[in-house]
Length: 351
Ligand code: IMP
Image 1: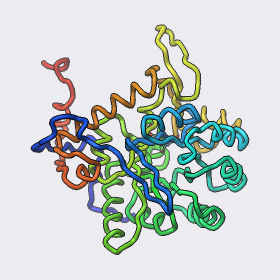
Image 2: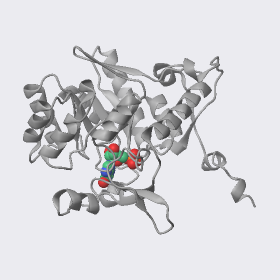
Image 3: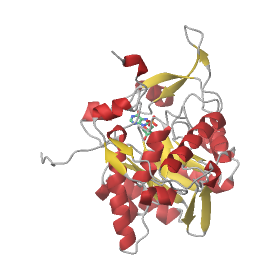
Image 4: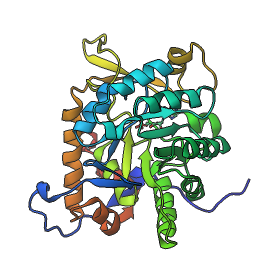
């Protein structure tokens, strides 16, 4: 084993420094990003992508998050026919997205989705810096040149560079950070999301300096509040992918259940959890996730509007009016654990 003398940092290890602000109204703040891709332009008014998970994104979520300015990717843990049917219910033709794997029926699945108007394909595997992902990207590039390809997940700058070179248009970053993830415990591997984003953003800048076209960066996993979204974007992410923060909303698949205390809850399953694997294929192997119940949160518009209001407020603290400015002008410092503790409500812990 080679031990690198480096420390990895996670969201709570940094804090953004408030700076002079000229912003008098949050309406001055623009959170949009335009994806320019071949002859296509896709505008995302908010930098949020809902994760391709069976308890997060099907057609309802896609339509609802799109109407709020984001993007949803239909999960792949279903039959080809069912996934294709879900895709046909997505209203905005420009952003029909679905996820596929890299083995088994993936070519057949892809072809069925393309027939239903697929525009964005997400190669959805846990370890994206992998020869099978390379082969899948090459296959898609040859067969379906026009598709926008999201691939991942990667944890390193080199991984990001490789996926960019192979032809991915956007890369999901971080391994083992998800709220329902046990990968680090089971395998001893992973890198926190913030750290992965920082590394990938360095690589992105060097690709730009060399005149190349780098992939967009999607911070994925472990984003637990709007502050983490602001930090992800400040660190270099173009978009964040959310699972738990969107789970439990009305538009997620699954029923509302009443728990023993009469409170409304919904399921939120890690895709490598025993429950999710059994639901999908009737059996399970190599479990790297857990399944859980989360409180019912109401409509996605209520949840996302609240998140975005906080993100805009965060941008105002940094004195910036756009995503680009946030990335270029924000300043972060490493914080101690007592500084982190002070940042949480502490009236109840006083002695
Ligand atoms: P969250 O937003 O922290 O809940 O993380 C969601 C992300 O966790 C997803 O977008 C995936 O990248 C990842 N993920 C989903 N299911 C699993 C699992 O079962 N094990 C490990 N990671 C998972």
